[in-house]
Image 1 (cartoon, rainbow, N blue to C red):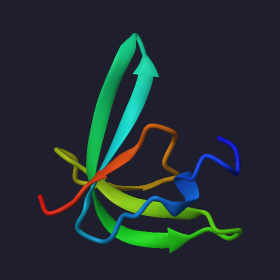
Image 2 (image 1 turned 180 degrees about the horizontal axis):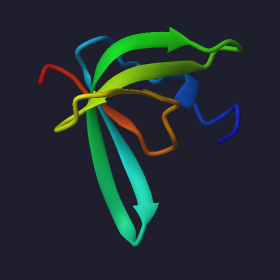
Image 3 (image 1 turned 90 degrees about the horizontal axis):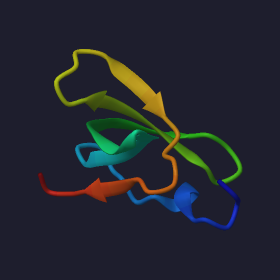
Length: 72
C-alpha cells in the first residue's frame, strides 16, 4: 500500500461498517462495526472494530479494497 492509494483518507466514523477483503483462496469479506477512529501519524488512520459475530475488538489498518458501509 503506497502513499498515493488514498487508504489513509478512508472516510469511516464510529458506528459505520468497515468491510475488509481477505485474500487467499478467492476473496472473502469481513465486516466490523467501527468502535473508534485511531490516528496513526503521517495522515494514516487505524480503526478499532468489532467484527460481526465476534465479542472482541481488533485494531485494523485498512488494506486496499476496504470500503465503508454507512447507515446500517
